Length: 215
Image (cartoon, rainbow, N blue to C red; front, side, top):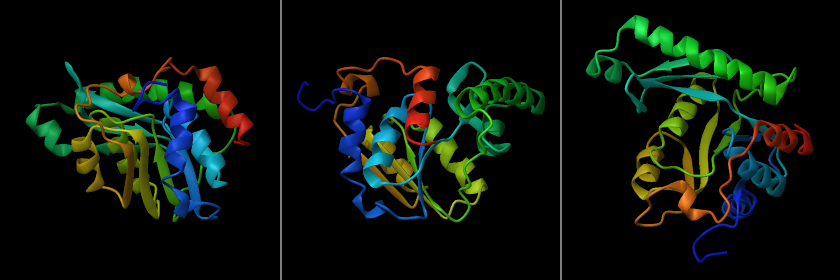
């Protein structure tokens, strides 16, 4: 392993879990992996902490022509979050918003079936939800997931990632109850640079990881 880098997502998850000991074996805690790359990390965290694992599906609604800029998001359970400031600033019409929501809803539904099958959605109401991804660059998808969890009544929201851009970590900290960014290298550049193996996680791998964890 190159110094300062993780071997793979499982290695990153084990490292991350070492920073989350206060949540171990608590019956109010659930670990939620953001698919696809966050699930292998989340699985290691959930196993180390002895708490349940599930997947949390969120689809960012990007501004047309500027997909990295989120005008909203949809998430598991029919949750929709809209950023009114971005809509106004980017002059997004209601029709454009609905088109984006419908397009992303189809992909979200496909992934729900692929990953969860007929299992019910996780109940996060009143619980401590630890949101895990393989890293944070801009943080826009994670921010969308945070807002969706708030809509679902999560009691406490913790964001946990192995590696992140320092500025993104500091910005996101203002919107959650706690945040753990295990490493914040400078310069950061991109999440994948901090892994020796950053191969894309497949739908099959996500299903197997959830199944092997009892999810």
